[in-house]
Image (tube, rainbow, N blue to C red):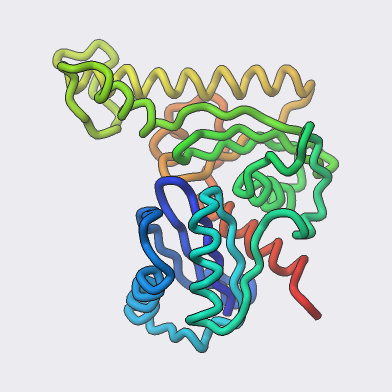
Length: 256
């Protein structure tokens, strides 16, 4: 079986694949202070509850936007599984041309999503990934990564409002009962929730216009399910797009 690990600034998502079938997945909080042994204990406990042993894992592939944790997870792989993992970055064969001023600047997660999106949908795409930052990436019909946009994520926006406005509380990000809210908590939720939907639809609309195409819009990431139903531009939610991309990249790079 294959262990795929997507390391984000807020969450780490792990998945177990048996060939092309996703057997199990987990989402845990990112903790930059954890050591390889501490992450090893965490993975051991997750595996144990799912009835999976370390010996069942034959390979690992990692995508990370947190450089310090990339090294930590590489050490975990060597110490607990006995082999070096694949790491998405320079040297990995993507099979996708990257049209960016400096291709090395493109986050690993964005490339993984683009590869998965093209492989699955075989169409021009805008991929919206709701993570710590929200990324918008355009892939053309030829399967070429053409660039995109990065905006502060929902949680960053809410946290900034709480920290910089003394009298405002920290609130849960949910759809409020009304846009014309009657209390402070609902007012904040209305501003963040509907304001963010406006941000998404405006960026996607402008990307569609600039691409001179009608790309399919795919949403992924932890908060995709919250925003997508209210968006006028998102066509589909693909919860496992990043994990699928890691599986595909592993297949393209594994030693024969």
